[in-house]
Image 1: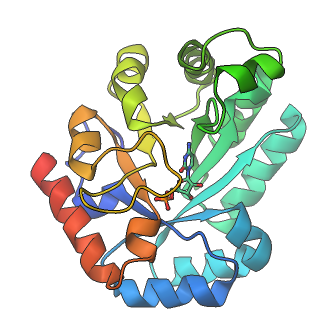
Image 2: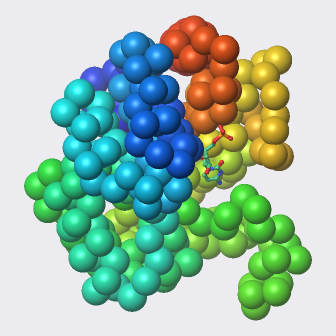
Length: 242
Ligand code: C5P
């Protein structure tokens, strides 16, 4: 999944993760069934993981799917390194950590993720729910854009594989991190679909054209009348944007 000229060309299915934002394994697996094999990657976040745990990961892995475990780890280095090892055992292929945990925490995570079979690490920089006032409230005087770049540099230096970021940040982050970094983009809305609570949205085509490695799509697929058809349209858009 590297955004690199050296690796084999990525197929559209390798570049789309469906966010399984559900409260139970049953609801998540119902959606997976309705997708009928059209998608290969599923993002499991805190809501589903705390409800369904590793047995769901095992079920999805057993069916041949790849898991993006979005747990946004943020703790002392030793604890986060242990969590990366546990996520490796669970079979995650991608795992998120908070860049705000600092250089030592990210280095410890990257070291643990160097083991065979370990997930690739993605750092989350500034939560998209935080604006300048929220940052100031926690003692950060930099603008959100400056803080994103600062944390991105730290993540790269610590050996983290990539970042989760908005489509608007792709240009600046590619310039900073180079071609190899994995840039994974949520907030994707196919033209004509509901924006919901997302603020900085992009179409699949525009995110790929700007340099996204992979897209995360939740509700435009999970709440579609026909999820498999919605996924297929997004995959076609990814293919056309290549
Ligand atoms: O339903 P929707 O397509 O908005 O889902 C997007 C997914 O990406 C959700 O799981 C959300 O938690 C996640 N995400 C996001 N914005 C971020 C980081 C993660 O929307 N900055």
